[in-house]
Length: 188
Image: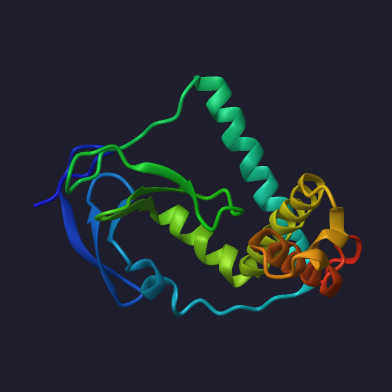
């Protein structure tokens, strides 16, 4: 029997969207075994519109501000022990840009609340994957700027030694930048 790391009650078998998980009877925590989250989110219907995406961006930014304010107000954040191994779990933002915090044990699973699960489902339903891709693109564009700045020959250096790993990276990033110019990102 596993114990809820948040309140100390036992975690009891439950089902959510056809997926077996453990639920705390006292607090709203859910324990999901490793690699089961995709099964839990498989039935999310994605209806993406530009208005939804813009609203989702605002919601994510508000969550980010709230998380920062909470950490500043209390001076720290709470790390729960894994119910299986008792090691402190990592606090992670689901999909990096949602700012929906889940507690993860890389070996055993994740702890979240029913409300958090609803926020994750909403993030995906409103096009959250596009925000993830947008963030990845921004990160790659920044990496391109750094690689070009660090290469003494700049962008033209990619043609001098075409098979050099740095130049292969520059050419790949330049192709990405050409396909999706930052100022007119297709993902915005």
